[in-house]
Image 1 (cartoon, helix red, strand yellow):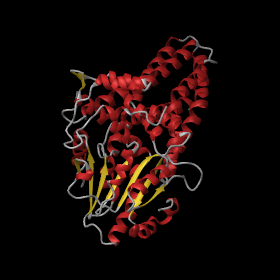
Image 2 (cartoon, each protein chain N blue to C red):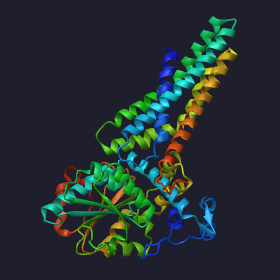
Image 3 (cartoon, rainbow over the protein chains, first blue to last red):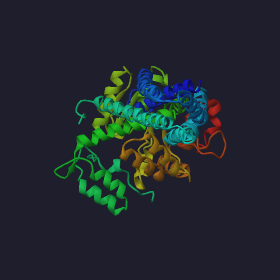
Image 4 (cartoon, helix red, strand yellow):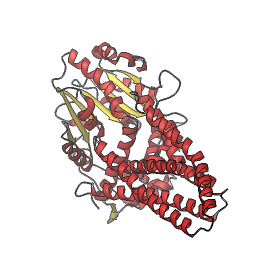
Length: 178
Length: 306
């Protein structure tokens, strides 16, 4: 269950990374399709990262002599990671829910007081979650897997940003594409 | 930092005030200006910009400005600027109609950049068929981009490279967003005085509200949301150069005596909490009551119109 929850959170995080990478790079007014694509791209790219992590986990599991112990260690680490990530995700999702209210002041307040600061905190929360998850772990494979997951989270973010930047440059009007 | 600190975007473009022709900008002179002001960061940003024969490459500058305007639009979207603009424009338009003014009612966004406000109003404003939306800017590249974007979304608005106060037909309503702080000293007086002409009936100028926390908050949001060094720098300097509501209203009253002027939306829900933007409202005395009535439940946000 905890691994599944981590997977859901990773997919959500990837989707939001896709959104952030696309934001501020299109000057159209109607951008629902544009942002839908960005969300989808982020969520899709995360599946690649999840796939790589799954392969790593499978390899570690295959070469492990104490498989039950490793599973237990993974399980405990993922539960600790959730203790950090779930409250963060809950705050962001509540703020997004408030943005559905028909008040420009409420919506703006969520940006100022929640979504902005939470975006700034994201890298630290990502590191804190993995650190809290793997530091008490007693098996090296668990720690390696945690570090790889963390690295992949940042690789996904950087990749999405590069893709969005390239697309934005291509969308510049003719004559301004330098 | 002083309120006279320059913005990079003000110095990397130059136009002939009469013909609006683009004039070359000496890169070294701009870099030295920033060094003299003790602003090494801005000097570095300008020094890194491409140049040809000592002058900043105008294409590179335009490319950068288009990117910066995309980033600025993102903040405008996040803070629902279009809706804020609409909530003031609708009662003004209704007051004009009620008094038989316009047909069509012409509203001009001064210094529109890539035209976000005008394009948003064209798509979502629902201001009516009798409203003509025009965006004006000195920078042809930004105007061409605004036109291109409007065409892509089939929007009913137009954009002109022009000094709006020299256009053949004056606007009934002028508005700006984040522009008035660029006018310093006498230039601000002159800018408001230009509104004081017979065909003009109202103006709205949205700008940052200077508060003790504004520079820090602006720095945080610009670092977080903006990607270009120019946008990060100018966004913070803009807040530091912003005028207080009293300064804006007093200057407007003095320079455009044919209008009643006041500040709208300085505080959030009548609490001491300041809004990021406040709005200088100017309106002809004969339209005052209809305008206030049209504000409806938002009327308490309107300061004294005198």
